[in-house]
Image (cartoon, rainbow, N blue to C red; front, side, top):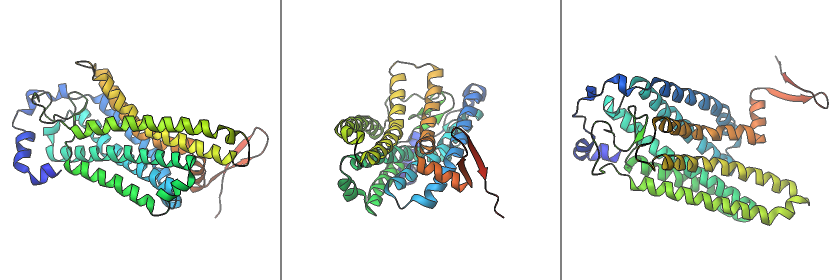
Length: 328
């Protein structure tokens, strides 16, 4: 955004729309089914996220892990609501960058920042869970109380920097994906004027950090195996292990998306179906944390049941009835 706001002359040289937009007819640019699928994914995942984030905001923001989880959830919801929804609408209507330059550029910048915020917060959560299992006193020393806000502040600072100074990846309905060159299909970027070294470096670093976290996880499991099999601390360690698995699954989402795009673009021209699948994969992986929170976290799931005034009552060895309170 800094380029757009404060270096307008340079911006207009690169992002001007001096060519004829209709030289490629709207019918060739639009991919309606692709767009509607993206919009459908947005609706599904945002609806899944709403009760989870509501519960986190109302009950658990005094706890370290849940503060970070809330940040991940908010960044994913914003990513889905703005970027994924825009991509879906652009595919349905056949819009490209020059159809609405200012809002498309702004939301593209927002998406770059949100990608960093979501993935970086996921890494912080996984790191915290590893420390919690390895040395709880170290986890407390680094994250206890308002110290968590320092980590969140670092992630938000990185988000702000990328949003303000990064070269955005702009959605192009002609190709059905996001590209650095906003004029793709009209003007080739032979000189790579729209390159983004930071984005490549960040994604590569994310991949290797995730590998390191998985190695740490395996080592922790091996070292704690005997304690987890017996003794009074076995239940607590099992709970910590489940929490760490949740964090690593969430953290993996960004790396999986990175790996997919890297693989399909190894060749000269990936098939259209693979590109479309890459977009679906990206949005699904931004929705997965919401599913993880509900399906794997008993505390959040139980709080959602209570928030919606449901409770489970066992009436027999194999029978469960769900009742709704009708207090007047």
